[in-house]
Length: 621
Image (tube, rainbow, N blue to C red; front, top):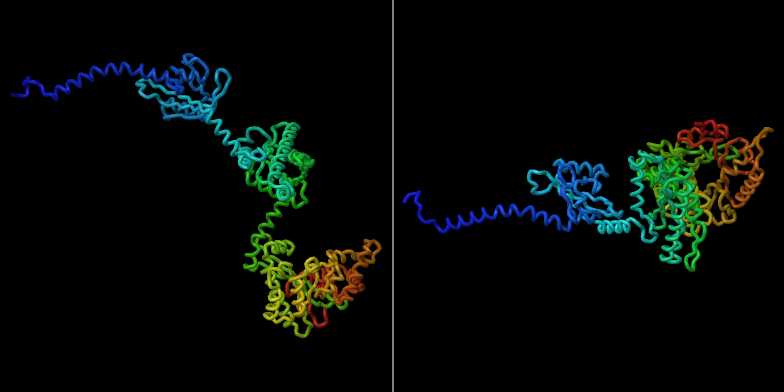
């Protein structure tokens, strides 16, 4: 049997033959039926669809798309698909659609707002992608899904997320979203004034309302305030062209009004005035009648170069100024005042490190005997050699040091440095009566440190006698002292240290109380001495005789209490003459010397004493 034998076929061969014949019979029938099946599915599909040709024209649309758009699906044939779903109204979407048409992009999916033939609108998710099994004929499948319900839910959720539940005003998140959008270059470069304004307000004393009446009443008050602010914003929009300012609750009792495309500072200031006026009438809350005021910070500037953070920092700073200035008012942002504040913050941040770096130095101003003109002592005055701001007088930083507590280490340094210097003068002039050194002490040093121990340790370390140290405290710090401050003063006095009251005469001025304090020196405030500024010349200004009478009375009473008196701010010889006649013991001021370096003080410590004229000459810078 060879390979060409025509013997009977095997079972397997018969099976394969049967299968092949079956496939050949079925294949033409499936190919013929497939287009009809596809068309049936396309027509009955619950998803709105249309077949689009390579030119972007609708070839056919199903009934669902016709129902969605409110028109006959057959009427859609030949229409531009992009027009049906508004793709050309957005430049980015239009470009992506054309890329899909050209086969350069696989798919486009976007959300569009469509308008039906009956005028109603809906939100739809539109998808455009190549049509599968299109053969040689290029085509696209356009599908449209109604997402109006989902969109509405998203908007409701966004509204809840972006609005305050108590006042129903926009919250901080929405406010900053609007503010950020208003400051974008695209917003102000294509029309508008290119300016923006903010009124940032805080209710005065709102915490007391919560504490007294409870948070429910507080929330009702916030809602009532929100209503008045909204009405105020609407009235402001009616008075000027443009939309109403956005009113938002930023949190707690803080509100903000955002003025986009403002016309200038006057517009925003007028709005702030209107806000204060709107809040002035009392609020009727059921059985309660509450009154509330507000402090308002006003900022208005060019949008170019402004950031949301910088704008709101300025608004917050200005609101703080309004509070500090007395509340129930509005305050306009002042760049110079802000620069001062920024400088103050910079100084506060570098104070403690500056002590460690040794940036401070002491100058000394003589205290001169009124009778003989001899230097009796010196007052130590601190200077800060700041690397950025130059030499700073104590009025620039002492208050900051008291606030943050750095006055304690700084005060120790001043005390130690001044006592060392006084001892050096004493050793350098052994034949002259030693001069005392007067050091200013802050109240916080009394409370936050062991001042008695610090003084005792410094005197022992330097070898300076206690009676050559004078500590100056302000009148407000000494008067009414009780408890620890009084104990500290008595302990220092018992040690032999002299206690002086600085700037006496402008505070309590309780001379009777002085008899119970361990005080030995009064330093009259310079305001009294300035009243002595007149000469014997005919055209000289007239002095206030009351100043001289008051000073004379204080000097006499002080002497009766066993106290000595130092006059500050002595600038003319005529002042010195009158103060000497009144009975002042020592004088301090520019007549004798400005504050100078330690070596300049050494020149004043002569054998016979230089007298007032000599002190003045030797002390000139």
